[in-house]
Every structure is written in structure tokens, then in C-alpha cells.
Length: 244
Image 1 (tube, rainbow, N blue to C red):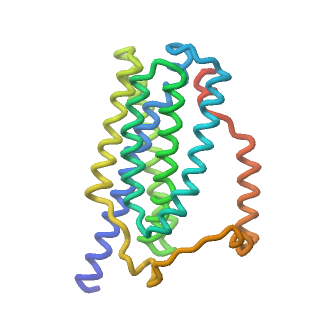
Image 2: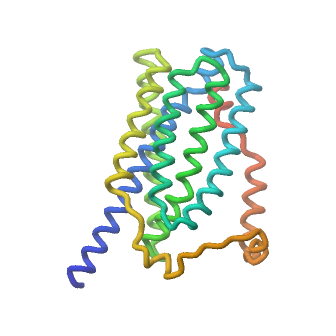
């Protein structure tokens, strides 16, 4: 193997590690907020469980819509990184609203915008991994990304519990949650890069129409159907936090 080939492999490994660590910080920041947010909303702001359900439902719905749109947009502009930056910056801005919140409306805005930010960056980061690595390495690549994401969730929840146990201050935890997002922003700006343009092919034109949906294989619709049925059984983790 020549030097150029070895260098390309090394750079790809570095890129995957950067993406995984970025996802770790995203996840840690989110769980620092959301692991204690339901209790903060009900005990500190007096929000009822019904209102909590509406806020959670709308926020999650917006996140799914943002995922679809950002995925289409990233294919259209042939850039994943710019959407990762936009999503991270948006999350950094609106996560501060949790610490400043004084009403259900401010929490609703913060929660919705943070979920939209997550949706904006979710599809492009998956697409970027697919751009960088061949199909035979997708299992390893996505597995590593998911491992770091889950570890971020665990670490973020533990940090929130420790800070809350020591200082008994929800807003302090919310302010501290900005730190991991800031680290993620540094990584995406300096360490994460789009795949070489030749990977996307020579054609730069992107067209999509609703009628194209009929060309999708039956296996795709089978997966969508099964996923939709499974999602019907899903409810917000916020209610589990309140129950605990």
C-alpha cells in the first residue's frame, strides 16, 4: 500500500472519530437538559402533565419534519457540514433559553427549536458517514457513531444528576449543558469536512418530485410501515421521569 492510500485511510478514520465525538457532545448536552427538564417544568414553572405532553409532542414532530427537509436540502446543496454547523449553532443559542425560561411558552420555544436543530443535523450526519465510507464499512461506522451517542447520553445524565445533587439548581445545569454543544461546534468547524465532490458524481443537478415516491421499492415501504406501527407505542420519556 502506497503512502497516499495509507494517508486517505488515516484521514477517514480521523473523520469518523471526529463525527463520533461530535455526536457524543450533542448527546451529552441534550441529556443534561432533558433528564431533569420534566421535573423543572412541573415543579418550578407549574406546567401540568397535559401541557407537558403537548410541548413534547409538538417538539418531536417538528424534529421529524426537520430531518426530512434537511436530508433533502443536504442532497440538493451537496454539503453536509454547513447543515451540521447550522444545527449546532441553533442548539447552542436556544439551549440557553432553558436556563432563562420563566413560563411554559419560553420552554415550548426552547424545546421546539432545540428539536428542530437536532433534526437539521441528524440526516446530514448520517449522509456524511455514508459519503465517506463504502457500504461494507457502514455497519462499523454507524455502530461507532451510535456507541458514542449512547455514551454521551449516559455521561450527560450522570453529570446532570451530580450537579443537581450538589448545587440543587436546575438553571445551573442548563447553563452547563451549553459547554458540550460548544465543544461539538469546535469539532464540526475544525475537524469535520464534507466528502470529496467526486463522490457525489459529476451531475450537480438535483431534482425531486412527489411522483418519485412510487419508484421506491416495496422493501422501503415495508420498513416504513413497521416503523410507523412501532412508533405508535412510543410515548415521551418525560412522563417516565415524572413517574420516577
